[in-house]
Length: 160
Image 1: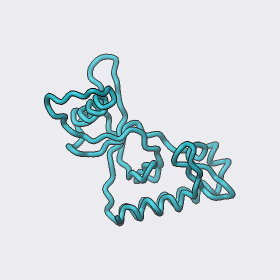
Image 2: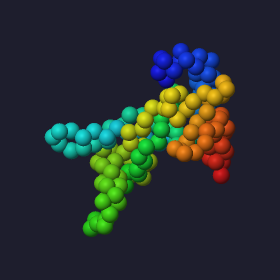
Image 3: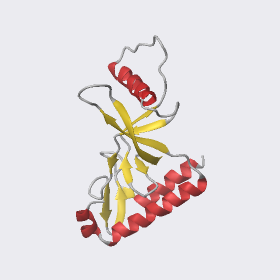
């Protein structure tokens, strides 16, 4: 959370931190598996690679780390060795295939979900404070709703 947001929102930042810490505790209590976070490194020379940067639980459009930091989900791939001789007619499908292979080459376990280049969430972005309540907008064009309810719904979905 940026210093500016902390100064502007005061108590709401503390409430948000408490909510996120309670959510982490519940995820740990339930033994919910987390996923890898990684940054794509493209060197001037040599091979690109995914560098592990941590782990987080995916809760819809949000990623929550054990130290209660929030990130937006961006690109998600699975570490899978591509089948030999498979070619794609679509450039997008080929790019997805290459990213899955890059995850394997970068050392992520076979089948592991990898969240690539997640973006830190700030109160001035998808989160906002309305009438003293921390709200989330999870899609451009969608309305906003209380973050507390959104996280409770995501936890309930884990039980299904």
